[in-house]
Image (cartoon, rainbow, N blue to C red; front, side, top):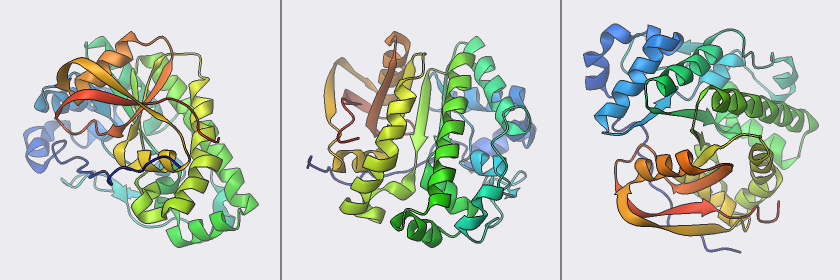
Length: 290
């Protein structure tokens, strides 16, 4: 087994879309959640607050759940979009969910916003939500983990559908000009799962999914959030430390990699929301036991 690092400390959105930011840009809300032009403008303005050219969107973690029918609230308050409650009671209801639709709703507007950001000279970064964090929005998470331990067919089939949809989502974003895809699944942190469960989930789900992403015929960086990186190490996926020629902001180093690569590369053990200096990056170097 590879060595597990100290748990990554997440302060997601500590410096992005704060109450002050929302008040200063209130003319862009709530349309900025649903329409491409104000969405792109908010993303660029939030990048400016971090003195970065990396413009991230969407600004919430519930867009995929909304596409599956979750009802949202928060369009008109400073806390942002969030689910009103669970829309399912059991995993047996998962087959009833509609497929993710990239022709209507917020998803195509996000893709359009990616294109607008790219044309504005910023580096677009699409935020995507990992499987277990999605499922926790849709139904009680204890039922999800129970179904996972039993490897229930209905859950595994939904996982396959969701991963296929995410591949399409990522491909559309890359085609629209996205250079970075930020993958986050906080519910797969080792502090929650433990090493054994984390290893199994990484080996059976996450690493095979990442392999499929790596086969997308495009180029860009898949950034695995720091909290989501540990389970890959638990499954013996090797990380390669890349020393930078000069110390620079972490997001700037990722942008540099994204603009230079001719393939899909994976980096982890960092946070694009942290405006910090670094002298190295950590790249996923193989797929472990997947």
